[in-house]
Amino acid sequence: MNKKYKIVVLPGDGIGPEVTAQAVDVLLAIGKKYGCEFIIEEAAMGGNAIDTYGEPLPEKTLQACKNADSVLLGAVGGEKWDKLPGNKRPEAGLLGIRAGLGLYSNLRPAVIYDALINASPLKKEIVSAGIDIMVVRELTGGIYFGERGREASEEMGEVAYDTERYSVLEIERIAEIAFKTALKRKCKVTSVDKANVLESSRLWRQVVEKVALKYPQVELNHMYVDNAAMQLVRNPAQFDVIVTSNMFGDILSDEASMITGSIGMLPSASLGSGSLGLYEPIHGSAPDIAGKDIANPIATILSVAMMLKYSFNMPEASDDIENAVKKVLNKGYRTRDIASGSENEIIVGTTMMGKLIEDEI
Image 1 (spheres, rainbow, N blue to C red):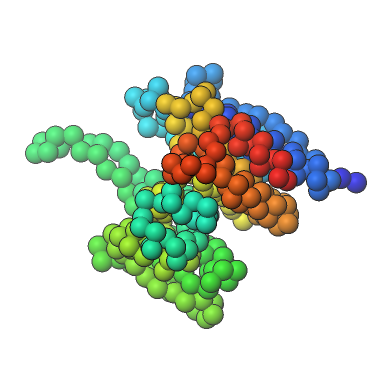
Image 2 (cartoon, rainbow, N blue to C red; image 1 turned 180 degrees about the vertical axis):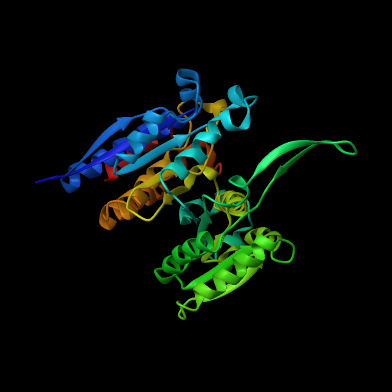
């Protein structure tokens, strides 16, 4: 009997519906090839949910995701909703769904493809050494979830505060993910913190070192976040797995994505203790190009590849998608964001790029 998987798709805002549509087509092609059925259900989250339901993450959307085998997200946000209070903005839906599904680890690969070396903003001699980094970002703790507020001060006027807070348990479980990931790669973990200033980072470093004792075959080194930001552009090839806190990971993963050529190329997986995961491109909703059929769908398509690997234990199918992407790029096809201006390149739109990858599968 064919296996059946229920996937909730959250198209979101801006280019989200366009890129998720292409990823779903690729996923359905995989289903035909491997004899399994992917049952797709769409739900609202982000700005579109605010417009329809008055909140960024309706309860029925969260329940649908909890009852699914996996979740695919496009992108949320846009200038239209920027003036709403923080807990009512589209981005609040992201924090809510991660917490609601118990997704505490975010895996963000940053890989440079041979065909796209010229698209990197870094010098060719730097990127030619190869870039294959996995950022493991803690997802449900830290300053994004700490106590926050505003208060009056006679001397300073209004004061706003956000609290960075981490527990041993939160650090232990994300460190475990990082070291287990490193075992399947180059056995090197760089833990990024700000232990020279922050007490939360001193605890972070202490706990990571304790977890490292269980993985003697993995090399561990520590790096302050400001140095890590510099080293990513100076010598990115030195990194294998980077494990870091919620806010530092948010920033560094975007930096890592850009040195590979385009934020439109990189997927992510948000995972918890079970097989249910949330998969999404790391780019934003890009409302300025929405509806123009020029957005790059590859990051979302590669997010589906991660879904097959981490939620459905289908590594061969995952490899099929990754190889299809490589073949299409090697043939010279490019969306606008990854074009270098070479005369051998063929510029295509969102729909055509998705179709080309689907055809390769």
